[in-house]
Length: 285
Image (cartoon, rainbow, N blue to C red; front, top):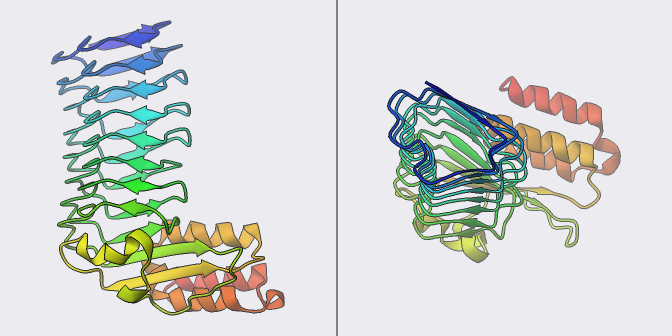
């Protein structure tokens, strides 16, 4: 069964809930709002093509669907509580820059979900990615709040990277993430000109990060802060961040080398030198 939504402003609550044969949704010129439970309990729903008009996805809107890939269009600003909860076949999610808030349990119990790209999200509510298969997460500079149990029981999660040192973490944000080994804190310090080339200890953590060791089942075993010094070119900054996102574990192993390059004299901080360093890191040398 295929549903085509054309020139529809809103899909109301429970509009297609419990349709066992619904497989595909095609949106043309709308809707802007998908209300609560609009497509919940549709176990054969595998394909959704959203229109660029979509702005809000309501509570439990697609709960228990069989989606494998989810790529939301630019313009979406809010995903409601439990919107994609228990989508057991969902493997990857890509969020647009317009998205600012992900509701409680929005993707909880998506047991196959390994890849998420948070775009410019600023708020993750309680349990939003709990009990998923994510392996690493890059939290952008826009991230300001990570709620209770946001990544609880993510037993495959090995690394998190945070750009915003002031992000507020709740007490159980990463509880029962038993394989979480590394947390990388990125900081571009354009005012104080500080550099921190050594691994952080528990006493180095400030603000909300000072209790990070209590937020997981086993204490994180390696803290690193890569500090981008004042005057660093945007090109070098972006290339380093791209490496952090694509291969965070290699960056942890090579954190001292990266910081040494960033701390070097400006005339030595050439694009060619950075290119050689990045190739060496990617090749494991």
